[in-house]
Image 1 (cartoon, protein in one colour):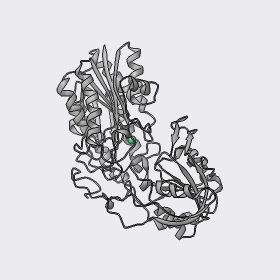
Image 2 (cartoon, protein in one colour):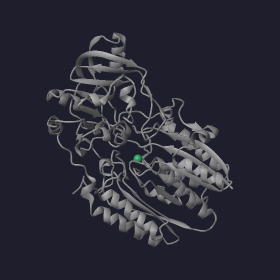
Image 3 (cartoon, protein in one colour):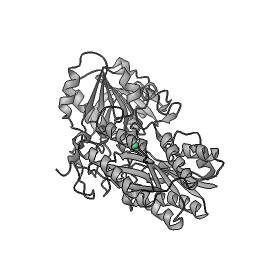
Length: 492
Ligand SMILES: [Zn+2]
């Protein structure tokens, strides 16, 4: 039995000014995505859905064909030619014939000339392989279209955020595909939408709330006979028709039952829609609250500018407000500003310099107040190649590259400035330039979720700070024109 399997993964923030060329799909590897045998090598043993596809298919003694393994960090719309190159690699392989298809996709990919990247891919595959069993594993943040549902036999999404079940989701999708190939099941797929443009900060499945209850509802449906049930939180930073939450249920043979299950779960979510919207506190109030904290380390989360949601990692409002209110002992980073890094390195370690830092990438797609870089004078304390190995629980052992990196000490604050954007996954982002966060009272992190396992245990207080950025939770910054209406909270 011959199975074609591929990974094509991007969460597109249509408001982000960051480009998404083919090279971005190597997830840090500048050579771009892996094709053919290279794709197999990268995917095998990974904790992705595709890693599970390989394990399951090999256990069954299948012949595997792996045209593509591609993943880019969240950023702006995908370059049209990059998309075509990756899509065509998958489609050409399927055109040579196979018994089953397994795809590891995201569900929120937007291309320059196509707002439903996954739907268009599946449609193209159906043109050449109209009846080949096809299963898709998707991210919980997928914005699911009717086209995706129409052109897939099996759709399964993650049930956790932070995502710790990528592999399990792939195994679930593959198991159903093999059941279908063996004639044990005849899957039918239904979708329902509660009409909510949910914010990612309200989708944490590790804490009590409507999202976790929604996922539990889905698990209950699976215990009662659904082949798969998924609550998609959706990705709100996309101005496309299908942005928002959805529920997708796969049932055996009974389409009416699949639809009823999806509708029931969707109605439960709609009844709790208020819990999916994050209420921001004005930045000045958040910093005043931080100022009143007397002991321990306080994390200040600049979640409006998170690179794992398409942020530029270069806004500087939170530090500016801290300095305005007279806070000291502040650690900051990583902040991406290649120009400031170059100036600091040419001045040399130990030099005192004045740098214009941050707010350099124009954000044309959001209603942003005018802000300029922050002019700061300080000492270049350290210069590093910005490399470290993750010791924390997410991506453990992965070597990370932030580009050339400096530690800039302005007295009240020590700022880690890098050439490339970087999520604070690990203490390595600071230790690579000799900064110990435990020697500070405040730590400004451009993070929403991934900081948790490493930095939350070090802190006594965590304060979410509202800042301008392309992943802000302030809906008034975004001019939605294409989202299907009505939708909460844009419409009452
Ligand atoms: Zn996600």
